[in-house]
Length: 171
Ligand code: OFO
Image (cartoon, rainbow, N blue to C red; front, top):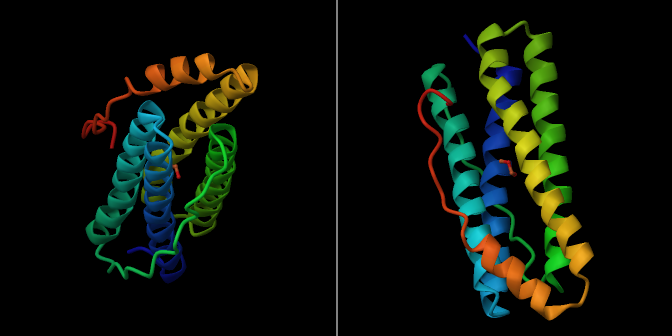
């Protein structure tokens, strides 16, 4: 039986993951408008990952016999200025999500909920990857600066990212 507190906190995290999906979709639309199709595609894949994160929490609550209440999703920003600013925002957003995952883990510890702790481990590890991938692109964009050929080369590289749903053993 999951505690009321932890149930409420995980339910709130579903909304944050869905907002992440929205944010990255909005970034994808902005990059597409800027004719940077590779960046747009990378962000689209990222949005798919966020959907998976949200559904993993969603299914977990159902599995624990707890209900899910879907709340309103905030409207994301629609203008990002330039690729560096967009990825800096993505990196900051991931740091914010990491903090929330850590808070969930702290709560699961406090509640002595071993099942939740084991489940949340997946997200703790996933956030390391989430932060690292955004941070790496921020660093590359800083190196590139205003050089348009560098932007196009990175656009080409990022466009090669494809979405693969994590296998059930990783879930
Ligand atoms: Fe769900 O990890 Fe990004 O936001």
